[in-house]
Each structure stands twice: as structure tokens, then as C-alpha cells.
Image (cartoon, rainbow, N blue to C red):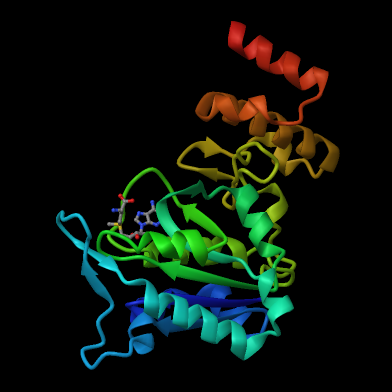
Length: 248
Ligand code: SAM
């Protein structure tokens, strides 16, 4: 997958993408991440990227021209017109659709995505209307820039790409993938300060372990995020487990 990020602060992306599974994915050429400074696409001598809002009000707005030109030059470098039409151009904004694991899976199916990071009071409305194909919010709070949001999106998407996690880990059991939160996890030692690992996990009985994990996934979701259960795919027996727990 190729990821292009438009930002006023490309240097912010150096550290997160230079460690762990991300670095490995880049080294193995499973993903390439390119940052582009929006300022490089300005045409005036002062390299102006922002201006006052029409109608007044505090704060500056990112101008449309450098953002349009950056995206257009990227598209014409890489694609014929037809190929570029399917390319997702995502604006990070607190007004966008909420970024969930479902959106992560959706984005991980593309070969190429472009992310636009806003700053100041945001971007000129014409960028939303005539350039971007989707708007993404990472939560109901306001950050000072889209860079941290872009890192969250890129991290969550890249770990789903085939080969990135390797055989030692699978994203399939992760919280929010099955619609449930993940079951409790333990590692050695089997007893620590008198707190023991549940016996079933030491039994070697894979069927029993899978049953225990599924039940705990359901119970943990019931306890912490009960609203998720409305959409989860549950058997009759599992619904009865929930009803029993609610009554106790
Ligand atoms: N005035 C804008 C509004 O009320 O919608 C907020 C601008 S915010 C201070 C500056 C930039 O940070 C935004 O353009 C966006 O790129 C980014 N940003 C802030 N909060 C975000 C969030 N929850 N999700 C994604 N991006 C966010």
C-alpha cells in the first residue's frame, strides 16, 4: 500500500514510523509512506498557506490552492485520469465520520490513500466540497492539527495489511474486529503474588480455551461497552448467558 500525507509538519511523522512493526513493514516494502509539505505547493514568495476567514472571526484557514495543487500533482505523477478517480482522498477533521475498526478494514483494501492534515481553524470549505472523497474524525474532541489523527489512521490500517503482523499475531481476535472486546490475556508466570492464571488456559484443551475466551469476550463487552452487543453476532446460548448475567 502507498500512503501520501499532506501536512505543514512532515517532521512530526519521522519517529512513529521508524519503530516496531511499522518500520518492519516499510523495510519489507509492504507499505510506503510519503509526507509532502503543503508549503512546497505555494506559488508566492512568502509561501503563504493560510489566510483570514471571510466574514471575520479568530484564527486562520488553510488556503485551497496549495492543497489542490499538491493532490493534483501527486495524481498526475502516478495515474492516468481513470485510475486516479478511485483514489481515496481523506481529510482529517473533527466533523468527519467516526474512525472505527470497520473503517480501518475498509481503508486497508485500497492500494493507495491520500491523507490531508488540517491546521489552525481548518481548511477552506472548497477542499471538502471539490477535492476530498471522505472525511475522517478520530473522536469527538478537537486536536490542534490533523497529524496525530493521520498517524492513528495509518497505524490502524497498516497493521491489517497482509504480512505486516507476521505469524506471531493475528488481528482477527482484536477488540472491535468481531464486534466484541477481546478476552483477558495472560503470560508467564502462572502465579504472580498469589494471583493465578485461570486453570483452563493452562489445560492445553483448545476447545475449552476457545469457549472460555468467547465467553469472556462477551462478558467483558457487556461490562464495559454493552451497546456493542446490539450489533454482535451471538448464538442463542450466548444471548442466554448475557440475560443470566444481567439478572444476577
Ligand atoms: N475549527 C475546526 C472545527 O471546529 O471543525 C477545528 C480545527 S482543528 C483546531 C485543526 C485541524 O486538526 C483540523 O483541520 C483537523 O485536520 C485536525 N483535527 C482536529 N480534531 C480532529 C479529530 N477529532 N479528528 C481528525 N482530525 C482532527
